[in-house]
Length: 418
Image 1 (cartoon, rainbow, N blue to C red):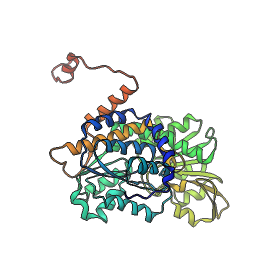
Image 2: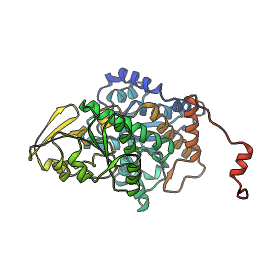
Image 3: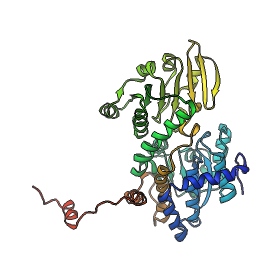
Image 4: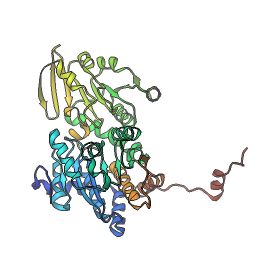
């Protein structure tokens, strides 16, 4: 079996951590039990480019239980948990190509190792697998029947590809499922980002000026959790509707140019590039802490920062201190990559339970279709979203009401008025 990981001897530690995470993933476990009986993915090859974490391991084992053959690589050079990669190889015989801290060449080499498998379906987190397939390995496209995408960033890329006629197979936007972005993005990113910042810095958030760039679902989660820990939260936005929502939620809204001067801790969550730029770094306080929780490491203009820097050093694990020519120090966390995975363990498994349930059921949906979907980017079918919500409620011991026949008739009628 082909694989490339850091150390196979880490497998026992990884196995225990996977078991611990799996205890909080009841929805995925119920899907796995059904997959073991029905084997709906028999003979299907899935190429996955995801964060190689304990929760991802549970998803891979679920797909495997359904009959799928799998290859897995990392979707971020700093997000891999090396013990998990080792366990997947040793205990589950899943070819895995991921090493925490791998350089860019190794990262794309691993993506190509997954594509060498000639997958029928792709499973992406950021769309690097799909973009590499379309740009450098297009000879493999004829065999691909569909794919899924986990992130806001990836979906932006895929919709651009579809709009420009470049996308060559249908993709389901798992990120847009309500059971994904309402919960994973808000509660998962909210908690894990704060966790990453605190683990890296050991700084007190209470009383600090905490700047959140981007007020999408991820930004809302981080703003909510930072305020809950006593920080004075400032939101920066370009979308007037989101900015208005932040104001109505009780946050101070400022342009980044002004927020840069007063912030103590910064976190970008926009999916866009150069959100915090050279001129903003120059105006920051001495000792400012800067992080990113968007998928790619493009939100912080680190080249611009380097151009105004005299020297830099690693002052703590996951913290690079830049000494600027103006004498100020700027602390960048996790090389500007996803701080919740670069400096911590990512989302809690109970949140990823729903996100990965969407992944598994979306692949099954595409496999079972009599006719392939036309080429485009699609939402997760509503019945899958609701099924996952019902399963999650069941696992939590929560019951809800159902409509009476009279209520159902009323909701379907146009004739009943005042």
